[in-house]
Structure formats: structure tokens, C-alpha cells
Image (cartoon, rainbow, N blue to C red; front, side):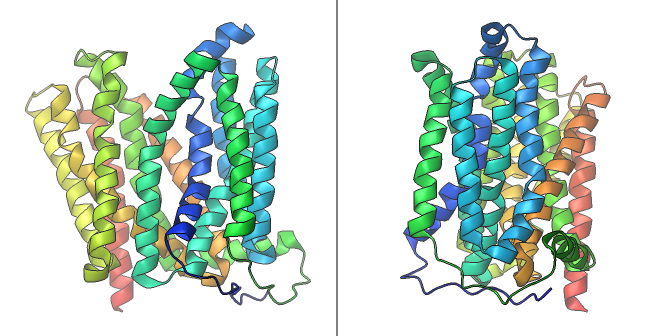
Length: 403
């Protein structure tokens, strides 16, 4: 399988409109995942279905969204980015229409699975196009802008989805998603560069896909970048899974939990913004080191307060402002690193990175449910374990570069 990186047609400028297009494409999957979350508490009554069946509408989306990235990545390396992206958007748009018309929970679940399968293309292909179109610190800067948008997406989507549900019914969210899918398909068709065809490749697509993955997992730098990215994601997922339980013990009800959980996403956005300003001056490695230092400092302070018996919500939220800030410094460079190790396999690299983020994150979310949570100590220890793993992987990455 030849691995010559596909070129792109000359484009007027890799300026704001192109960056905005890529950000919109990559954010669509997360928007589709979270926009209808406020409606889920009503679907049980609407469809006369148990809550376990309702939860499948979310988990089915997540599984398809993660797994299909493994397929879209190599296909985009082989056949070009834009056609695969447009195919995924078409599937997501049709699935959104199907969801809006669903009359039972089984049909809605199937529609959500198909939505996730289609949206997977927007995540993996758009990340790959950042590798194709930008180089060096500029690539990391664009990844930071993407990180800022992904940090804003869940809180804004759930707020908007809830308001639309109240005013126009749960179907309105899926109507909006179908319209957005069409708009993004047109934006991809007319606003993204067309890849020049790669040299002919007569090998079977499955053999080519497995070959690409084998090359990547045998490259130590790629494995280390993915380890940093995945364990950093898992640290955040542990917080998401454990914080509601810990905060409940501190007397914080459902209506107040969100305000404290927002501490991490808000500071994460700030961290990504700082990355756009610091990356040209400090470089990827130094920015990531500062990110790990802030992350570990925030976790150690939170654990120290917990061990000292300070059991208040602010004793959890305030130290973790540093964690969000640190993650905002780590993730853009880690994302850029995963797709730049083997540029010709950027699609496959983005697919593995996306899958491992979700798999490791889900593992962290599961682990936090296995321990008691009287206070924040147990949650903090699990988070610290993942954060230390990320820091060790970063150290190994810097050591390998210096050899």
C-alpha cells in the first residue's frame, strides 16, 4: 500500500472561513450527541419505555460514533477526505429525519445508532484535514480553536436542546440536526479543498486498513501521543462520572451540580485559547509540560483538601480549574501529534485516537463507579492515576525526541 500523502488543490487561503468550516464539521458529532440529552428524561413516558431502553439511545450513538471512526479514517486516506465526509453527513442527516419521525423507542434507538455512524466521519475526517492543510505550530493553533469549540458545545447544546424541547417538542432537535447536516454537506462540497487522487492502490480495502493500523501501532511516538490523549480524556471522564455523586454528599442537588461541573470545561476553553497564543513562542513540548504541571497541581490540591477533611463543593471545583486549564494546553498538541507522525495515514491515526479517547474515557467512567465516594478522595486518586500515566507518556515522548 503506497503511503504518499495526498495533496490538495490550491485553495484561496487557509483563513478564517476554512477554519470555521472545519470547526463546524468536527463539532457536529458532539452537537448531535448532546442536543437531545434534555429530552431523554421524557422519552420513557412518551414511548412507554423503561429508562434502560431510553439509555440505549445514547450508548448506541456513542458506540457507533467511536467504532465507525476506525472505518472512515482509512477510507479517507484511500479515497480522499471530502467524499467520505459528505457520505457521513448524508447518513447523519437521513438518520436525523428518521429520528424525528420515530414512533417507538426501538426506531429512535436505531436512528441514533445511524446518526452516530454518520457523525463519526465528521470527527475523524476533519481532524485529518487539519493535518493535510496546516503545518507546525499553525496546526496546533487550529487544533486549539477546535478544542475551544468542543468545550463550548456540550453546555450550549444541552441548554438549547432543552429550550427547543419545551417550546416545540423533542422532534425539533432532530429537525435542526437534519438541516445542519445538509448545510454542512454543502459547506464540505463547496468550501473544502478537493484532494488530488492518490496513486492507484489495488489492494483490498480491508487489507489496506489493517496494514495502516499495524504501521501506526508499531510506531512508538504515535502510541505515546495517543496514550497522552486517551488518559487525559479518561481523567475528565472520571470527574464527569464521580462529581455528581461527590457533590450530592456535599448537599448539592441536581439543579446545582452543573454550575460546579462547568469549572473544568470553562477553564479548558481558556487553556485552548492560551495554546493559540503560546504555541509559536514555546513549541508543542513545552506547552504540554506546562499542561501536565497544572493538571497534577490541581489534582494534588483537591486531594490535599479532601484528606484534610475540607468537604465542600468549592474544594472540588476550584482546584480543578487548574485541571481544565492544563488539559487545554495538552490536548491540541497531542491531537496534532497523533496525525502528524505518519502524515499519509492521518485518517487512520485520527480514527485510532478518537476510538482510544472514548474507550479509555469509558473505562475511567466505569472505574469511578466501583469505589465509595464519601468525599472526593477516591475520585481524585483515580483521576491522579490517569494524569500520572499521561505525564509519564509525555516524559517518554520527550526522551525519545532527544535521542
